[in-house]
Image (tube, rainbow, N blue to C red; front, side, top):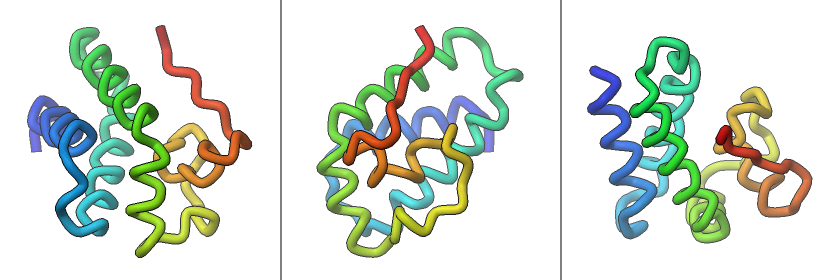
Length: 102
């Protein structure tokens, strides 16, 4: 899938209502991880849009955490900490501080 499509899907999910299965948001986080791994290949405007989406997720972090925690154990995540979206429990608890690139 093309990067712009992935970014659009990420944006749609973090801005929209939490009205699909929580499992769908695990796909959203997988897309975000893919974008993270490909960040050196992305244009500046794409990176800025991803940062905007990340901020939207952070603005709603407790809502997302509560919704997804019903089916996913964040504290068992083996993903790297730089992929903070897999560690919402730590972000909510203040154990992991997310600093978005400016």
